[in-house]
Amino acid sequence: MKHVIVGAGPAGVLAAETIRSLDKHADIVLVGGEPEPAYSRMAIPYLLAGQIAEEGTWLRHAPDHFDRLGIARRAARVTALRPTDRSVTLDGGTEISYDRLLIASGSVPVDPPVPGLDLPGVHHCWTLADARGIMELARPGARVVLMGAGFIGCIIMEALVARKVRLTVVEAEDRMVPRMMDQTAGGLIKRWCVEQGIEVRTSTRISSVQKSGEGLHLECEPGPSLQADLVVVATGVRPATDFLADSGIGLGKGILVDAHQRSTIEGVFAAGDVCEGVDWDGGHGIHAIQPVAVETGRVAAHNMVGREVAYGGAMDMNVLDTLGLIASSYGRWQGVPDGDTAALLDESAYRYVKLQFQGDRLIGAITLGLTDHIGALRGLIESRRSLGEWKSRLLADPARFMEAWLATLGK
Image (cartoon, rainbow, N blue to C red; front, side):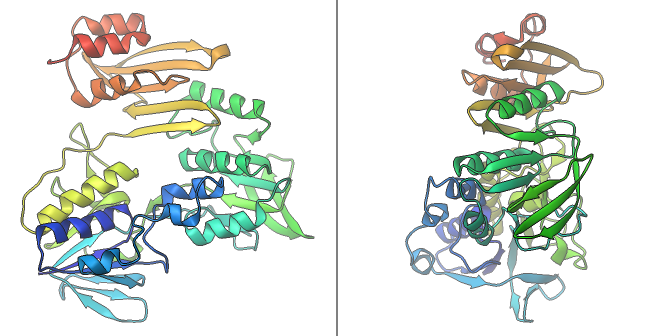
């Protein structure tokens, strides 16, 4: 049996290793699109901050790791899937046949429609090559503009602060981390960052980037304009599915898969950020976090070798440390039309709890400035347990979620 895995990130690497553990004789080919050892993108900010060396991003450190496992590595970009021939095409035209295919191609950065983003001095922060370019320019005192204050942008922001640059953050939405936090929490995170000496401009778009002397000139709407030595683009990512355009595979926002990570094409599976998989509450969604990538890679590998394993579903979950201020969001944190909401706010202490209910179940939550027992919130939401009388108690005092967790165990 020949297994081809597209993508050498956490999902692809774990899948290749799992297949080998289950089938000592399988032919396994791991195709990665970069000329680098397999690495974790989520470690790049730690590299930028100087907390680790480049080797610290590597997923496996022994140079002969894949050779010892009998896993063939190919550094190439996949350009097409040909399901009728059961093959994939690589850049340069080479074709690789498969019996089972796993697509774990991850995500790619989204470029906003801004002229000048191809100029020298403008970088995404997505690859090790990007990181090298940023570190070259992000010297102490350098003028740096960070486009985007989402989850990834805020992690990059912290790394840039560690490099002691003069930082301006520009976010098109009306608050920081808009896909993770509501207006109250996002506004408090902005205020926190400003108090740390960062200029933050929300509800602002960069309309163009132009060369200006030794640096860059950025036109903003609304103004004023900005001058920069480095522009870092962190305006979101999307599943890497372009090479699947003519394949006939089922696509939503990502590759549609069932609980066994099977796509709509026989013999083709998907895992990680590229797939739109099952949710914890029965829906479908993209969950671009490394623990989900690893687990879906493991589940896919079992099913590729014929061992039926179902994935229990992922829940939207983000925990963010922004210069020491901890924020988290879980589940349906925006609420649902027929649901109830409870909130507790202490602006001066940067403490906030907001709970979302549907019937007598907790379905979502936001916290800010809290670290104790927030795992209980995740447990209450993920377990979908009935709260009973504890719903009214939480509506009156959302901070009692740990008590609710303990009181409802076993329900």
